[in-house]
Each structure stands twice: as structure tokens, then as C-alpha cells.
Length: 172
Image 1 (tube, one colour):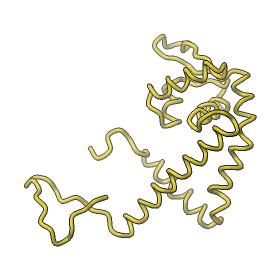
Image 2 (cartoon, rainbow, N blue to C red):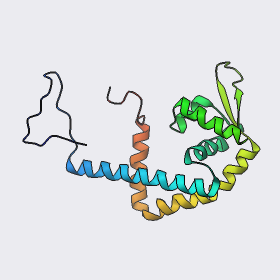
Image 3 (cartoon, one colour):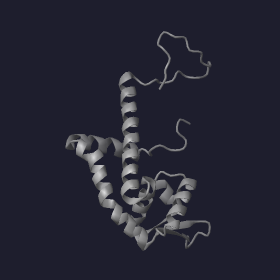
Image 4 (tube, rainbow, N blue to C red):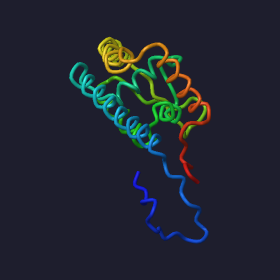
């Protein structure tokens, strides 16, 4: 993140507090996190495209539905747990419907709500894709950290998630 030189005069509005710039260590950590996250997403997407003919985002939708009671979930909840916007999820579900892997049903008690349902073909697709995906996750992540590092990562990520994660009102 760009920050002014310590010696440079930076014009600021009188009412604006000085930003809390990242320290060199924080900056290095942040950039490493971003770089690894991008590399991880790219590697998992590439593996799933090659081996299962689907992007990682579609796999996530299928996996979440496969674990849900009745292999179905309200679209708004599915968007939340896959960290997708409602419009992005709707687009993904439309593509999955074209493949016959998911269908959309009306919510039984809320006429405005929709439910995504994993079909038998969709379940077969996610079951077939899972072994290669798990192997890729192990190769690019879990096999590269020891148990102590894993415990620290789990603790940090669980703590951040318990604090509400990153919401739409970030910084506001």
C-alpha cells in the first residue's frame, strides 16, 4: 500500500485523521497473504478446470449443496457461505442448471425466496471432482505447513471469522 515518505509533507483535511499506515512487517505479511491467496485460487481453479471441467467457484457451490440437508439451500445462504454476491451466485447456478447439476425451486414458505437443489448428476460431478481437488489442496497448502503452523493458521482464521469476517461496511 503506498504511503508517503516519512519526510514528505502530505496535505490532509483538518478533520481527517492520519491513516494508520502498515509497518514494514505488516506490509510484508499482507503482500505475502495476497500473493499466496491469488496463487492458491489460480492453482485450484486450474486443477478443477483441467480435471473436472468446472471453475473453483462452481465446485464450491456443488460442495456446499452436497453437504446441506436434502442437498438444498436457500440461495441467499448459499451466496453467503460461498462469499458470492447474489448476482454472481445466480449466474453460477444458471450455468450449473444448464449442465443439469443444480435446479432452482421456490422456497416452500417464502414466495420471494429461491432454493438451489443439487441433482443426482450434480452430486455425481462433485463426488468425481473431490479426490483431485483434495489432492490439489493438500499439495499446495497442507503438505507445505507443519502441525504447529497449521494450528496457528487455524486459530487466526477462526478468530477473524468469529469477529464477523469482512462485511460490506468495511471501514465505515
